[in-house]
Length: 482
Image 1 (tube, rainbow, N blue to C red):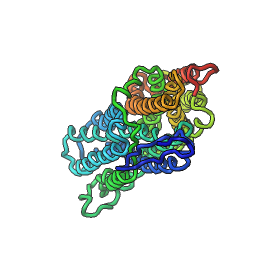
Image 2: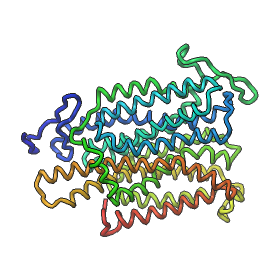
Image 3: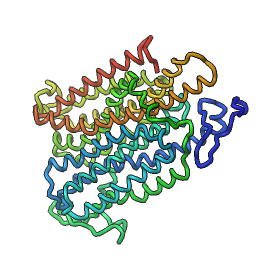
Image 4: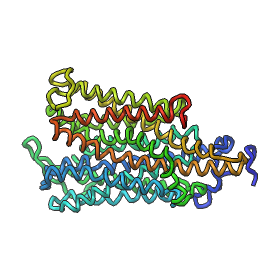
């Protein structure tokens, strides 16, 4: 087969499998690769959006259960909201390795269709306030299927794009996917107010709000996603592709556990995505605890919206000026923004409060500082995910002993495989922030009277991330500039 750039092989697509895929070949990319890659990206985006919506569904559902007559304790409600973060983060570890084992198209179909299980289950369970707590907890854990999808989705898309385009592509996939967090918090309170599914959606429930009885269809918060999940799974089946060269055994992917940079990037991504998902989960509760006169549901969804929308910008900036440079400055702004949040907190709320600032606090200042934090989590998510595939590809190319075409092609394949696995694994560890940040707020408030101690620990962690990024990736003569 002739593989020269002037007459490069065309991507063969029997059974939707691409037997030839060389995105680093500019002629191949311009002739046909870019169009195929973009099609797979634009089908992946809504599938990931729906995954995030299902993953964060309990952040809304749990709030409404007491009004619906469910006799659960406050601690039980907390665990219902936290369980998807724990199961989702754990599932990401396994999902990280599934694309090379199963195929990107097949796994996207299976993982997207699996979201129907918690969506339909929750829709039926909330209609009966005698549903047992173990059943509800199981459904909450099943929502972690949505959290797991991120790792496999990002690993899959990383295979389709050349090195100089990975940051932008991964930023678009993750950024628009992350919007599911904000949309589910914004949309759910609206769709439960009407019987939009008619006789197919079940009977309404009666709740008392502000002393008046109201009819709600709580099941709609889950059912609204069902037809879209089915449509996305069908679109993935008919429109996406598997890449033959992306196939790899678990052993080949497990090489990342011996790579120092895998663990370093896990720490950095915990600082960015862990902050995004953790701040999103804890923001409503923090507002309610510190500014009880403010309706948290009116503001909480704006933070995740900002973080999701700017993630593609982070990837684009990293492609243009370098992922490490963007990441260093981004962590600096994050640390300063945390100090800004501390400045605007009500004084006397905790033992570690700043000795200056408005005594009663300022919700406006607090909210704006958190918007800055969400903005920087989005930028950092994009820049760190551009760094990972570049690091692993560069590392493999450095290990070449001969520069013949076959050896280089093999190194590129292995570098892309390890990079995709590292993307997924970093996403897995980063997702635990969705549990630990809200839990840190609660522990800090219980121990010191306010959230200040937790916030100071976040600031210290961001300073540590600045030092790590600068030393390994950003400084002159860094070990792995990227």
